Image (cartoon, rainbow, N blue to C red):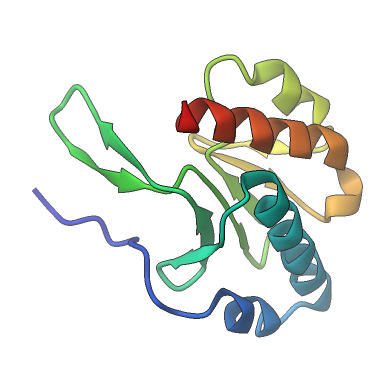
Length: 134
């Protein structure tokens, strides 16, 4: 079975976010770091070259594939901000309350943070974090 390509690294989260090319995406990335830091009460870790992650949980699929992945995280991609770990059973109403987002298989995508409800995002991060920590 192949090793996952995206793993925690020792790279600097601050250096990564400071180097985000698009000024709006960089500003939103720094704001998300503050929000995730506060809600999770833990430090961010770089996952691969471009994902800022928090926590660690083990997963196992019915196929037998298993590994470790962050509990929650984000990535300031060129096209949109990717939010990881927020689509879980029971979070559907809060995800819907975010506002202008697109849903992927495992991500929530948004443009600028100004287009979503940040109180709903804070509630969502907290709910997922508490469930994963229980």
